[in-house]
Image (cartoon, rainbow, N blue to C red; front, side):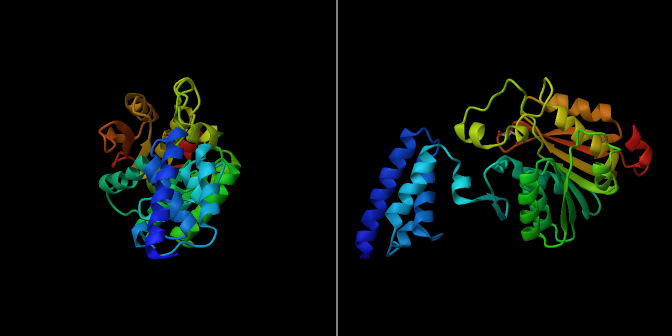
Length: 306
Ligand code: GLN
C-alpha cells in the first residue's frame, strides 16, 4: 500500500470507527477510535506518520471495535492503562485505575514531612498507587493490601515492574479483626511514613451509570459497604491511626459528598492532629488528608487490640 493509500484507509477507518462507537454510546468515540486503530496498526506513533498498515489490519480493527461497541472498557481491550508515569497492566475482573486517583501521590508528597520509606497502600486493587509510589520514590518500600485474589496477583506484577524487590502484596480483609493472623503482617509494618488508599466507597444507592463501570469493575471494588458506603473507608482510617508514625499522613480518596463524613471518621479514630479535605483538579472534595499527631507516641500493640 502506498503512503497516500494508507492515509485514505486510515481516514476512512477513523470516520467509520468513530461513528460506530458513538452510536454504541461510548463517551469519547474519536479518542477511543484512534486508540483502537493504533492498536490494530501495531504502532504507538502518530497515525499520520504511518506509511503502511500491517496485513490483517482491517480484521484486527473489526474485532477491537466490536468489543468496544459492546462497551468493554478501552483499557481492558488494550490490556493496559496509563497511571502517572506508568503504563499498568489491567485485567478483566480487576478495578481499572482512574486518572483522578493519580493526585493521591502528589498529596502524599505535599503533606508528608520526614522520610517516605515505609509506605502502605490499603485496598490496592491492581496496585496503581503502590506501583506509582515505588516508581517515583526510589527509596520507598510498599506493602499493598488487597482482599481479592485476582487483584492481588495483578498488583504483585505491577509492583514488581515498578520497583523490583521493593513491593509486597498482602491478601487480607481490612474490615476483619485487626488482631487476626491474616492481618499480622500489616500490623508489623508500623511505624509507617504514609498510607495511600483508594478504597471502595460508593454508597449502595449510587449505582454507576456507565456500562464500562457497572459490568466490568468488580462491585466489591466500587461499593464501600454500610448505609453510606464508608464501611471499608472507616476500616482504612482505623488502620492508619494504628500504623502511622508521628507526622505520618493518610491520603484516602472518597466520593465528592463524603468529605465531612470522612473527616468525622478520622476525628473519631483519634490520634490525628490535622484532618482536612483536598479537592481534585475540578475542585470537588475527593481526598481525606489526615496527619498523625507529631507528639503522639509511636503506635504500639495496645492500639491493635482495641
Ligand atoms: N472512583 C470509582 C468510580 O468512579 C469509585 C470507587 C473507587 O474508586 N474506589 O466508579
